Length: 235
Image (tube, rainbow, N blue to C red; front, side):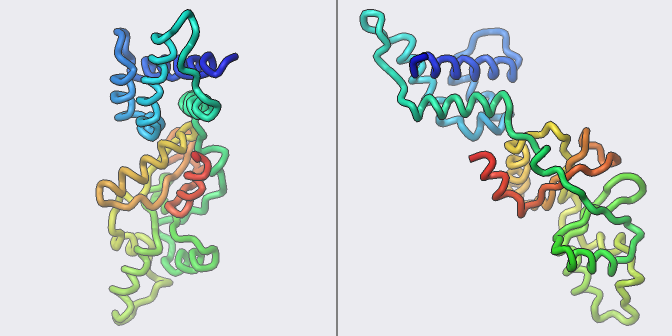
């Protein structure tokens, strides 16, 4: 296949996926499709500028011909890039298997000292906390520091006798974690961290279960420290 044919195949794949994604029956200009889809799909948002340029190139290939010959032939790099976008759109990298791992949890009634020791020994900066069968909170190193700073000089202060539930009252942002299912793409995870930051909050961790249900077993965790790995996977 020529570069023009490969480009058009990838372009058509993207265009069809945009129509499917937006559930549109009527014809729309590619420019409009990209603008609309970029609001709901992180892959399109990331490559929006490139896709708009590819729309112009596609028009040159299809509509501008001299004696039946294509006068705009995409170079190898352009073809590779649009094929890359098409493959990401159809099969984006998922959170599993990359971030499938054992996740240690503790209970809200457990001693705070147990959690602090565990975080120190393992080098963890957060622990999902259960209240009953479901994860309901995330204990972070920042929360522990705020708790210690407030309680250290109190008479009778004993971290071994203080329940994790009491420490969680020092959480800066209670909604500092998010559940996702195993089909969630790394683009969506990256977008979640961005959305929290854009809203002035900090997303400490993304917790993975089969169906994003807090009562399901945890299958993995993605913390803010894992973002460089996410970005490398999406490069």
